[in-house]
Length: 176
Image 1 (cartoon, rainbow, N blue to C red):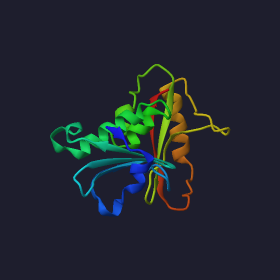
Image 2: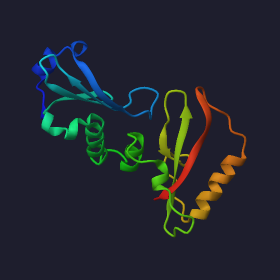
Image 3: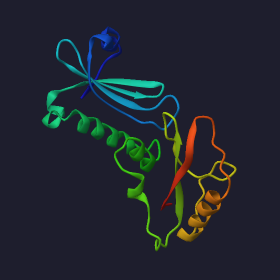
Image 4: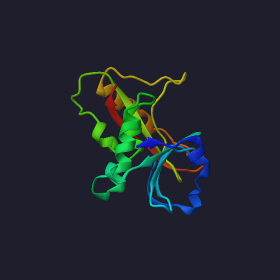
């Protein structure tokens, strides 16, 4: 892939391009990351990488896409981005739909420190994050049992839904 220059980007009219495939996160109410693959009128393909306030555009060669599988191509882009070290890779891989949260859950006999992954349920988006303390730091539990107790305590309390929230979050105990 070759990044488009600023001049090339300004010449493009995406209303005239055919959208071939897209992949998007639904972590936030607004400003979710997404990839879109377009075909221009001249047949060239363009990848738009929209990372909130930062959009990047790339020329994509047919040889970059195996067996014309556009969805797999976008997932490969997302896997590469998720591993760039800018954000938590585990959360990014779940948000892109590459992995399920269950795939990161540890067994009850896990002996190392753990965190609790929380996935909220709002109309139109599902925030993914770790549970935090009052200062906003990830809670780290010494044992699986301590994390399980935290979850049980919170699930036994009355839960008040936020605006647009339709159910309690789901919790997963994962490696710290």
